[in-house]
Length: 517
Image (cartoon, rainbow, N blue to C red; front, side):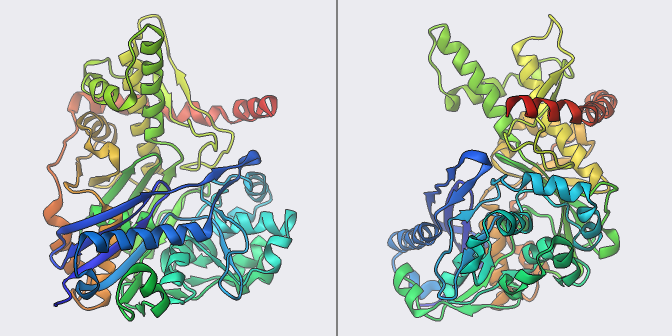
């Protein structure tokens, strides 16, 4: 039987999934399993390391059950996963502690101290990345100070995809994007001793695995992993870049000669613009965001991330459902959301200004403040519920513009991924706030697409990422949604006010946090 499929594994925060694509990029089959993690007192958020691999193996077996002869048909496997966080394993390859996820905020005080003492300012020009409590650097600093026993047995510090790659191949490695933005020099695309020194982590350099580029390098599926997942030993496995990069690639960020952007609007928001050289990377005065190497030499994804995106809409719709229930009309979010979404454009634009910092971990882009909280400004007695809901959509869009402004400029076209990309209402408001056309893809599964494209290049299906994108991504782009000219002017007047409000609130958020603690 001819090998004619590429598998893309995407182990996200909510779901672990694997998608099978044919060599033309068409989705053939998929399987998925919900992910599980635990929130702990003090801001901890942990995931069972062994179970993460077991869930991944189970999903691969389930895909095999739905596709007879799968093992003979798989040409290569690509793997990506949720980013940041800390996954420590010992010399035998066994977990040392539960994984610390990107949602873990235990190191928030360390990040604040690093901002105050100039550590972040020293590392920012090298990494192109603002330090935040999500990152392995902050986690290791916390462990070293408060729980050194966690590090005594540790041999390798990994991220989620690195752990899965290790279980698939037996190779300890990390990818160029995540290894560099955490501990490296984005211009050299390598680890930086100066960054490790600045963080006080030089003595832990032995934890950092080798960096590999999965668009060029594969390792064979081990015999033990093959037995567990139901594939052939020796099948080439590619270590994809971090899920944000793979999702951006699958959504259409990379296109030579274009100034494109991608906004991933899911539970969190990620706003990414393409930089075609290191000279095009724009570093702001205040350290924040991420500069992520792309698989193509000399290209970068410059990203700013909102801690909460559609979580804001979920919260508002849940309030409506609770109010309906209190009045004797039971309705769930799944039913209520499309009904309300269809009416939002009928509400008044700019009736109030919403700042979408609804997550209990605060905000991380385009500024880092664990104390930041959501707020509504400009209310009066004429504001209706639908006006409030529209202001939430507008707030998400202002947050996106805030992020793009910090990364240099709004790109000429924004391509969308994430569940909210399906909303015509959000696309219309977002395009008008940004003053640029937006478009969503027509198939989803962008993270799996991105890592599978990298694997396809690595085994020679395509000579370069340019050809892979032309075959797999461009045909799936949807129609453009253009800005509404009248709304563009209104939102242009409101955006500086949006920025001014959050800049003035830092002391208030800090005082609220002290009282609540």
